[in-house]
Image 1 (cartoon, rainbow, N blue to C red):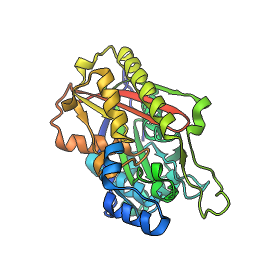
Image 2: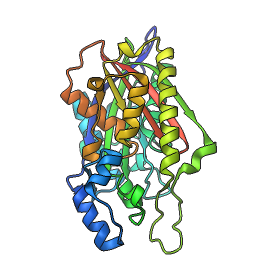
Image 3: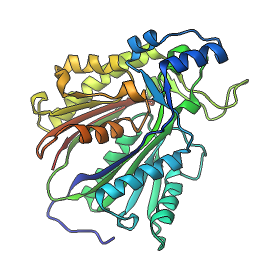
Length: 335
């Protein structure tokens, strides 16, 4: 679509959508499965105490199918059609194919389902661990502010339950599946105020998943050093929040809602405590979904908008960490 000229260009979120798989796997269900199929012993109390998770969702759909549903919802919420999009960015860590990009197949689906006139909208994937969705959001914000695009769909979709090693008690309890999407559009006033991001490749191997399976495995499984991840996550999330507040010329007192990546409730509680963020300003849904990887922040944001009465001027602070080792935080002002 023709690009709009403005004296100064900003970015806002105009619509969100999610796909939450209907299949619940409670802690008790998982405990029973681990005992019978893998001879791994754990308990509901052990899981809740260490993670805050009570259940997670297991998807029967592909990442493309999940992402398509989430994007349909987001377009409907934004009152837009696929032809209004200038770019699609798909964030995923669990690609079923090395190529083509999952974003390309979502682009095919969304246009085939909704409209008859096919439009070759550019589509690309991005991968940065659990930080992928917010990295995609940052890229979309830059495209819009630079004048390269007016409207961008950002999709985050993952199926980590298919990459989970169920013989490893410390990691198999953590992950769930899901997808989310946002429509970002040009605005005359700031929605996104500031981003802070970084990567420390020296500790990339704290979380990894190979392309090819190890001997005896049918598919490659995720491997994680939980203790190291915890330590680095708390440190990097706290540092990134402080930097983004400085970049946006804000303080914790200016924040109406704090959303941290839903990897572990203990990590988020530690970060919030160190930053002196009151519990009533923190949003969490980890007890329902576990760690869904890159859709995590987007699902939180979608649900928070539905349950919290955010008014124009309210500021949401979001922060995420992921494999790589990556992190990103953002400030978003309601318009």
